[in-house]
Each structure stands twice: as C-alpha cells, then as structure tokens.
Length: 472
Picture 1 (cartoon, rainbow, N blue to C red):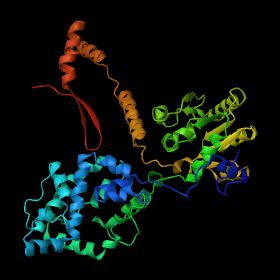
Picture 2: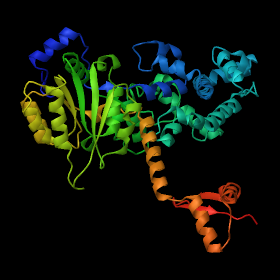
Picture 3: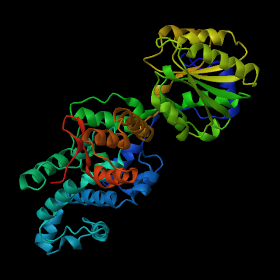
Picture 4: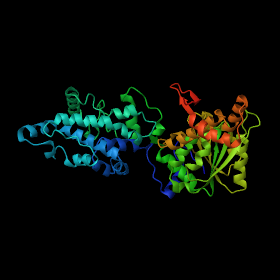
C-alpha cells in the first residue's frame, strides 16, 4: 500500500479515501489559537465567536472568560472601541442633554462598566467628560496588558503583540485625537472594527488565521516570521493519507531513528493527529544514540502510544550503528511479530535498501525538509511511497516538552559541573585545619553552618559562582 504525496493520489488511494470517508481539505491546516485570543482581548463581540463560519473559536472565548486578567483587558478594550467610535455623540449627549457616561447604554454599554466593577476596576470617576475617561482606559490597558503575557506561547514576540493594545500617547489630548482620526479614516480595515494600534492597511481580515496574523504582526515591526510550523498545520490531505495508511494496516509500528529526527517535531505531529486514528499503532520504537537530542527520553510522557526505547552504543565515536540496528529490528517485527506496516521517522536515505528488501511490507516515511535529500524524495516518488514533512505539523503548542527537555538537561549539566560533596569537603577542611570533630559534630556543622551560608550568584553575563558567605 504505497502512495505519492506530490503528484496526486493514485487510484488506489482515492478508493481508500472513499471507503473511509475522510474529508480532504486544502493545502494548509490553519490554526486559530492566537487569533482567537487576540480577538477576545481586543473586544470582538461574542456573536463572532458563536458563528462557526468566523475564524475566532468559541472554546477559546469560554476559556478566557474564566480568566480575570483576560476579562479585564477585553472589557477595557471593548469600552475604548465604543468610546472611539461614538466619541462625538457621547460629547453631544453630555453637552446638550446633560447625560452622564453611565447613562448612555447605546454608546457605552453598562454591562461592560459593571463587569469591570465586578473585577475591581473603577475607571469612570468623571462621568461628564469623556476625555479623562479615555485616558483612564488607555492607562489601565497599558498597566495591565503584561498580565496576559502567559496566555500566549513563549515563541511569539511579546513586545510586538502587546504593542497592538497600546494607544500611542494615549493619555494625552494630542495622542488620542491622532488615534481617533486614524481610526475613523480606516475603520473598515480594523479587525471587526475593534481599535488596535497597527498600520491599518487593506489586508483583508487580519484575524483570518494564526499564520496570516503572526506574519503581519512581525512585518509591522520590520521583522520576518519564519517558523510557519508554529502557526499552521499540515494539510487535511496529508493527515488523511496517514490515517488511511494506519487504517488499512493489520499491525503498524513507528520506527524512529533518533539521530536523524527531531523529538519535538515528532511529538507535535503525533499530538496533532487524531488519537482514535492512532489507537491502531502497536508501538513506537525509538533507536536512540548518544549524539541524538536528549529529549527522546521524555517523549513517552507527552503521547499516549506505547514506546520501546533502545539505546544504541557506539564501538567508535564517529560511527553510528543505527542503520543496521533499525534494519534488523524492522525485519524482526515483520517476520516474527507480524507487523505489516511501518512508519519510518528518519531523513536518512540509507533505509531505502531495507525498504527494497521488504517488498510486501507497507512503508510511510516522515522526513524533514532540510535533512532529506532530493535523491531520497525522487526515489520515494518513483516507487509510489507516500512521505510527509514532519516539520510541517503544527508545533505551536510544544512549549511543554521543550521546557521539560531544557530543565532536564540543565539539571544534568549542573550536577556534572558541581561535583561537590559536603561530607568530603568537611573532611578535607578538618585535615587542613588540624581540627578534630566527631561524625555527629560534622553533620551538625554542615546542617547549621554550610547549608545556610552557601549562595549561588549569577552575573549579568551568565557566570555562575557558588559562594560561602561568612556572617560577621
């Protein structure tokens, strides 16, 4: 069962797709996590989230509604937009009719004011002058927007993102007038006509999907966003091909060459595939190597598929035995364990020899853009073997495994660098000072003196120093 990923589905693939009834989408799997959060915070009306044909997702709205810090920013921004849009009418209602800001719900919804009050924010001190009211809104947004930083992934540039919430010189008459004039002139370009600080160009709906918004966000700051896997997913067609391959297998395993693959890309790929479809996978076999990323040991904690972990030792430091180990294990799984389908996760072209020698087995390859050669892809296409790029899967939610890998490695390196045993240290000190202590006295000294006086200092340059500070 083999497929061609670039020249279209062959006849057999079309038949299989119709049998399983998997929807085939466009060329990109769009993501809406970032834009849904931005839409919520800038005050996009709930009816937009409720509309299944609009990009912002209602589940994100519901999640953020439970976050006080998010509610506050949303209500502040929504009020600011209403005041910007109806500023003149608000002024006339105050001057000609003697009304207060609290008494004109058609312009300034009382439910927004009440919601802010319920969350402990009182911004409408002067009910007869809209200008201080706007200054207060801007000041509150500026003071509080950083509270929402952790609502977004770490990879996004927070300075760029938070900047769209800040009205330039928003606590001055000149700044607010300039912003208002620009808003009125370009209102049709603003996302759902909500005020944000941006160039306001004719870009269509800038909150159409994460890829479009983040790419534009960086361009507004004269920067370029390059890692598109953080904001988009592989196409529905690619996922359909993978599901079809697994569905039609009798027994399927993943074979992973850790040295020639990326643990974060594989984790992202598996987490972005339907868990029910993946339940037929018997196991993932990891062939790890001392030169591979250390995060492979963490993979099992982040996915729900059984993992068999094999660490390959090297006879020579510059020579990996992964190729032969993978080939032997794959043959063993095929001939002994009745596995008929293999997902090979590696960009190493050397495995083509193994694939050729198992003509009755089914293969699907997950490769990486920069690591895979043209020769490998050409050979796979010529033999109608389906492959996909594992680094095209959406990876925007992968901060957890990356942070865990960093912390695990920090702990290992720190432990290796700081080879200090306090018992041995005390014995050495006592020998040098010619002082005698019993074992009980040594332990008491360590507990009362050394532990309380040891301090770790980190300089601005990142240098770490362990100090024993004497009390004077």
